[in-house]
Image (cartoon, rainbow, N blue to C red; front, side, top):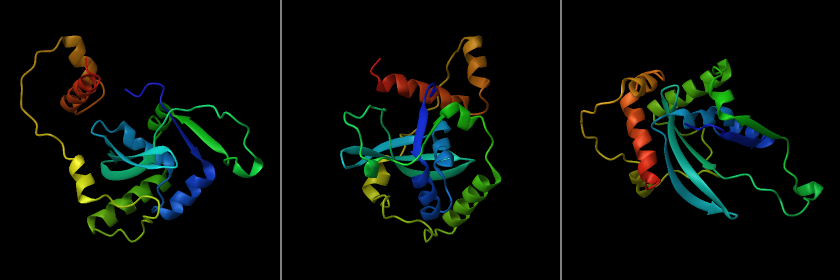
Length: 183
């Protein structure tokens, strides 16, 4: 579904985010995009860049992220040495999602899950990701589902099932994408 998607981040920013956000690194956060139930909503604009809130599951743990999503563009001018970003990490979605989580990533996610269960947000620094307001959270409510019967070609059904459980959700997601593109 995200064929050709690449994630990019600054190595130093990745290190500081792990300290500020309970050990969650950008690679772990990017796995939320593999969740068929991922929800994205526009957030604020900072220095001309649109920020987004994403709510998705990683290892069956619900996680909320605030991020910048955009297309890569070339800079019109040469950057001075002081304004150049640090080492950039560029990774394809498939290479991340096809690799198992490391022990450190699993431990960080388990820690977040334990804190969420206790409603403990003490280890999360909200300085650059303000907590969602009630109005913002309301945008993430899913529309009610309607049970329907559908007849599918056998090869289409086999294709949907080969990705594992949740093929009904997958069908809904595919239809929602087509609907959102006005086709």
